[in-house]
Length: 164
Image 1 (cartoon, helix red, strand yellow):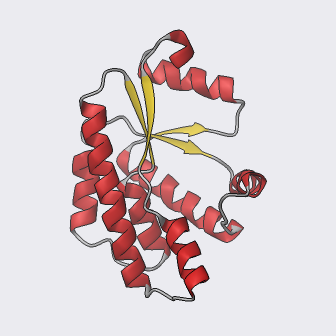
Image 2 (cartoon, rainbow, N blue to C red):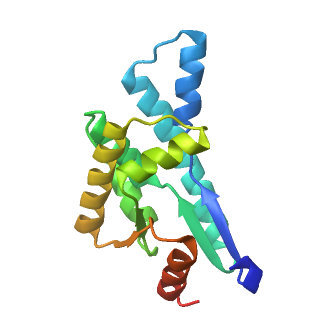
Image 3 (tube, one colour):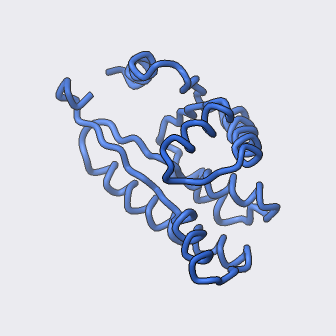
């Protein structure tokens, strides 16, 4: 889109999960899951708030990579309760947004992750998280696109949805 002079930006809403995991392993510290979840949720909330502000005051298309719903998925997979605040914040922060879930078969995702070599995820985690994301998409009426298709085709589908 930038090549076509359409203003677009990708905004990452990281929670520092992989950094925290690597740090705790290297330091020999085992964070209780509640502490890890609290730190990750705090960092992600800060990043979502910052990037929502950026998107609201920037012209063009903003693509949010990960959001508060990602933290809810992590909580559910860890067996933690959703709580009250995080689901409310997730809903409120996406009221005016069009959410598109880019769905990838867990086996393909596993292959891509291993090829990149920057992250480490188990196939079981990818299968469980995909199921949870698809459940959320169905529940909230999000658009689901097959992200395993060639990139130009996926970009064309995204362009049609965005009206660009």
